[in-house]
Image (spheres, rainbow, N blue to C red):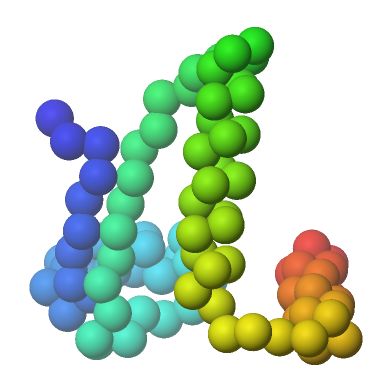
Length: 92
């Protein structure tokens, strides 16, 4: 049985749509697509596995960053401040 499912909002049964809208806390748009994942609990990586995971994350971040437009230090700081402010607003 798969652990991931994708559905178009306009193809959901009425009761499925109501449930998902309750989970999201907002109405679904007719053109939206919903993805559902199921995760099994697992222990956090440790030792060499943790270091390998860290290395992979840093490599991925550097790859993504290398494709970003160049920004000066002031512009980058403003973007970080904006992101942090948005995150703080969501926690309240």
